[in-house]
Image (cartoon, rainbow, N blue to C red; front, top):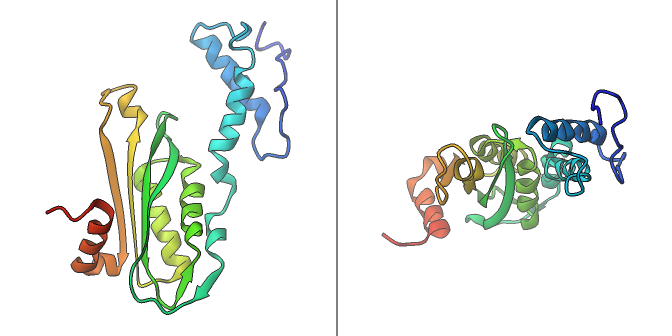
Amino acid sequence: MDVGSGSLPTCIGEEAALPVDHQRICKAVREILLAIGEDPDREGLRDTPERVARMYAEVFSGLHENPAFHLRKTFVQKHDEMVLVKDIPFASFCEHHLLPFIGLAHVAYLPNGRIVGLSKLARVVEVVSRRPQVQERMTEQIADLIMEHLRPRGVAVILEADHTCMSLRGVRKPGARTITSSMRGGFLEHAATRAELMALVFGRGS
C-alpha cells in the first residue's frame, strides 16, 4: 500500500478524548516500519501502529497534566523532622532516543508547619516522569515543585535508574546505574541533615 495515497488504515479503537493525535502517530510508525524494510501489512505488524499510539498516549500522559495539582491540598501539622518517601518506582523515556529509563525515586522534605499526603509525592514523581525526559532535569523539576508549593525548610530528591539507551545500544553497558540528586534549603546547607538522608536512603554502612 502506498503510504502517500491517503488510503492508510485508521487506528483501531482510536480514543479521540485523549489530547494525543493518534492518527498522526499511526502514520509515523507505519512509515518507520517501511523505512527499516518491514512490511507493516503483515499479520504481526498490522496493528502495531495503533498499539504504539496507545502506548505513547499512556507513557507521555504527563505532558497534559500539571504535577502541582497534587500539592494543592496540605495539612497543618507540627513536625520538625524529615519526611521521606523512598523507593518510589518510576519509568520514563529518555528524550534523546525515546528509550525507557526505569528506577526508584527518593523524595524528602523538612516541613515548615504544613505537610502533604504521602501519596501526593509519588503522584508528582509519576506525572513528571511521564514525559520525554532526562534524569537530571526530572530530579530538578520534582525538587522545585515541592519547594515552590509546600514552602518547606528543605527538599531532597534522589533518583537512581537504569537507562536502556546505555544497555541496548551505543556503549551497551547493562547494569550501569545513574544516580542524580537535587538538594534545597536545609538539605543543601546542613551536612548532618544531608548525611541523615543518605543513611536512610542507602543504609548506614561506613
